[in-house]
Amino acid sequence: MKKLLARGYLVVLLVILYAPILIIAIFSFTEAKVLGNWTGFSTKLYESLFTGGLGNSMVKAIENTITIGLLAALCSTMLGSVAAIGIHNMKGRGRKAITFLNDIPMLNPDIITGISLFILFVAVGVSQGYVTVLLAHISFCTPYVVLTVLPRLRMMNPNIYEAALDLGATPAQALRKVIIPQIRPSMISGFILAFTLSIDDFAVTLFTKGNRGLETLSTYIYADARKGGLTPELRPLMTLIFLAVLALLIIINIRSARNNKQKLIK
Image (cartoon, one colour):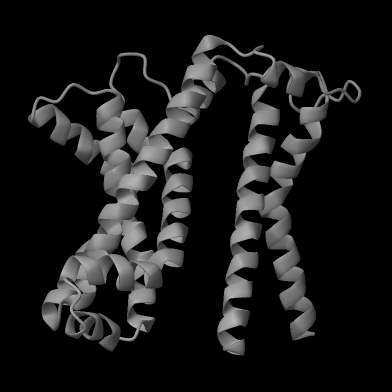
C-alpha cells in the first residue's frame, strides 16, 4: 500500500508539472489564436515562427534573452569556478562563513534581489539597460555555479595539485592542466544551470532593464499577457525551448553515465 501511494503521489506530481507544457505543445499545432480552442491540426504557427512572421519586438526579445543568457552563463561559470576553488582551499570558520554568504542569494526571493540591484544601480548612477540586466544575471547565477562546482572539488584527490607543483608546474599551469580538467563536468553543469536561470528570470530583469525599451522573453510575455492575450507563436516557441533543454539534459546524463562506467571499468 505504501509503494502504491508513493507511486501515485509521484504520478500526480509529474502530471501537475508537465501537463501545462503538454497542453502548450498540443495547441501549438493549431491556428487558433486562443489557447484551448482547437481548430484543426496545422503547422502554420511553426511556419510563421521560422519564416519571419513574428513582430520585430518579439524577435529582439528572443535575441536579448539568448545573448544575455549565454554571456551571463559564461561569466558566472568562470567567476563561480574560481570562487569555488578559493572557498575549497579555505579552512575553518572562514570557509563556513563564505559558504553561508554564498547561499543567501539563492535563498533570497527574486523580487528582493531585483529591488536591491535596482537601488544599487540608481545609487551609483548607472543607466539601466542591457549592461545592468547582464550584470544582474551574473550576480544571481554565480552562487549556483559555486554550489555546483564545490562538490566536485571535495571529491578530487587533494594531492594531485601538490604533485603537479612538485613536478615543476607553476600554479597557473597546475590550475589549467590539473584542476580544471577534473572539475570540467561540474563547470558544464553550472553553465547550463546558469543559462537556464537567466532565460527563466523575470523579477530581476523587470527591475534592472530600465525604461529604454529593452525586453527579454519573460518581460515580453508579461507585457503581452497584460494586453489581453498571448501571441500564438509563443506556443511553438515554448515547445521548442522545452525540447531543446530536454535534449540537452538527456545528452548530459548519457555522457555522465558513460564516464562513470568507464571509471568503474578502469
